[in-house]
Each structure stands twice: as structure tokens, then as C-alpha cells.
Image (cartoon, rainbow, N blue to C red):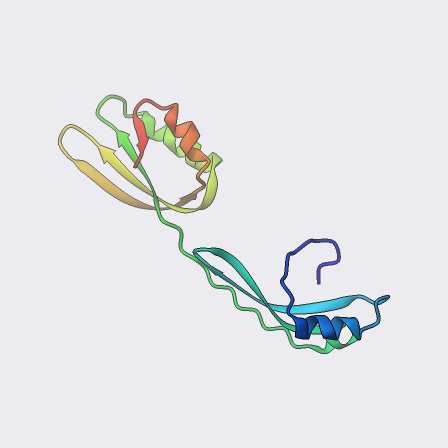
Length: 136
């Protein structure tokens, strides 16, 4: 239960009728179904209850992890091999939820590495300052 946060919910007439018949001096609980799609987060009102009845309600939650697209860094390894240490430091300073993929580019060939590391998008600005690394 959240006693301090704010949330925007649209109520229809059947829900408003129920609220009007409730004691206005007591807290109310609104049970909602929350879903997310490409347009944003949607909240659908399932029930409106008083606090006493809400405590008896069974709560079902389901968390679905949305996989984030990988962040790919292209590293020019042909000029300075110490660049990997700088990239590793930046990666450790910018943890996030996007899987990190590295493309190490050299004179002979490119090597693609899928890593166990995850980064945030905030790393992009810092990578721009590095001459030998680019975000794909």
C-alpha cells in the first residue's frame, strides 16, 4: 500500500457510484491491473474497497522482465590497446539494464564480444569524449 505517492487513474461511472456510497472519512483502496505497451503504462480499475476489505484481498503480482536492446560499443584497438581499460572503467561507473556488446576493431579483423556486463544510456555522453570508441 502506498500512503504518500500519486497516481493518475480514470474512473468510470460504476466506480464513482461505489465511491459516493463509501465513508469519505476513511481511506479507500483501489485495486488495479497494470500493463505496459509501446504507448506507455495502462491502469485498469478492478475494484474499489475500504481499507478493512482490502486487507482481506489476495494480491497477485506478476513481473515480466522486458529485455533491453544491447548497447554496442565499437573500439578502435589498432591505435592504443590501453583503451580497453578506460572502457571497462566507464562501464563499471555506469551500470544499468542494457546488455553490453563490444566490437573490437583492429587492422586485420573485427572481434564481436557479448559480455555479461550491463550499462545505462548515460554512458553515451562519456563515450563521446573518447576518440577511439563509438556507440553503434
